[in-house]
Structure formats: structure tokens, C-alpha cells
Length: 219
Image 1 (spheres, rainbow, N blue to C red):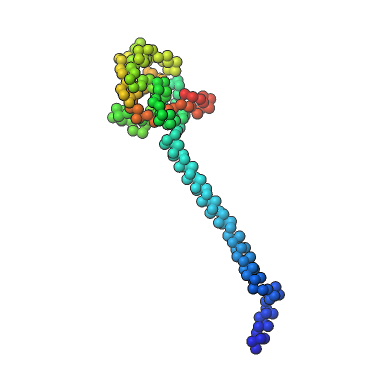
Image 2: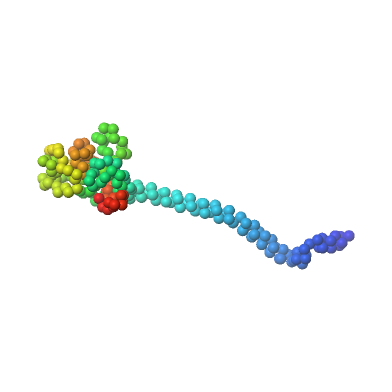
């Protein structure tokens, strides 16, 4: 009876399976497993690609934050205090590296946080200003008869909108301070109004205008 059952079981198997060795059966099982793995591969690839994209986005954001904090950042010009050099709506690059290796120099345009005297007047601490450096520590500044004098010598200022229509007596720039003015001399809230700017308030050097394209170039 048992022998008959075995024969019946063998007749129900496919010819290939009936004639297969244990090694052939194991190989067939491996092939089936590989096919199942291939069926799930597209889904796995999707999640792998998603993870890679998220990693790229995270790295890009981190680099952007580092660049903005320590290297350079774009700035928008909100007022006409720097006319005609910079117009409302201009966009400039403010680099933050050079002043780590050298002091700010006369004639350079800088972006800075408002000093304490402006914050007392109600300006937010994070409201950046943009002006041109006139005097650095140890230099003297005087404004007289439409001219700005640095160390007793009149400055040749072909970048201003018009000569200043006010007077300012001789002053000496203290250590770690700057004297800054807007190129639109008669419409600028600058050092001739509120005094000296601490060097520690300087954000960076506005050295390049990248918008509008019609006036792209160094400032």
C-alpha cells in the first residue's frame, strides 16, 4: 500500500520535478527568491533615491548657511542714501573674509548693524545699514564749504550725488571705530548725524553689484 502511494505521488509531480535531484530543487528555490527580490527592487530603488535626494538637500542647505554666515551673502538696497553709486532695488554681494585679515579702508562700502545710538532711536538691531568708509582709527575728518577733509586734505569724491550742505568741525576717529557717510550726502543718516561706528558692527564689504544686469560690476 505504501509503495502504491509513493507511485501515485510521483505521477502527480511534473516530469521535470519528478526527475530533479536535490541540487536542482535548491537551485529552483534560489531562482524563485531572486525573482521575488527583483519584483521589490523598484520600490527599494525609490526609497534609496529619496534618501539620497534628502541628503543632497541637507548638504546644500548646510553649505548655504555656512557661506552666508562666514563667507558672503546677498543684500538688497532699500533706500537712496547711497545714490548715485547704489540705487533702490540694487543687489550687492557682501563678502566677509577680507576684514578677517586686514582692517577696513577709506573709500570701501560696508554693510553694518546699527550702532547703539541708532538702536536707542528705535532702529532694530538686525536692520543693516550700508555706507562708505571715510575715516579710520586715528584719522581726522572735517566737513567745510561743501568738502570733506581727511587728515586736513579735501577728498576727491566723484561718486557723491552732491556736495554736503552742512558743516562739521574737526573730529578724530577713536580706536576701533569708523566714520561712515552715504554718497547721497544730503539725504543720509550717517556718522555726521549719529557719530562713530564700532568696527565690531561691520558685517562685511559690499564690493560687487550683481543686479540689475545693466549695471553689474564692482561698487
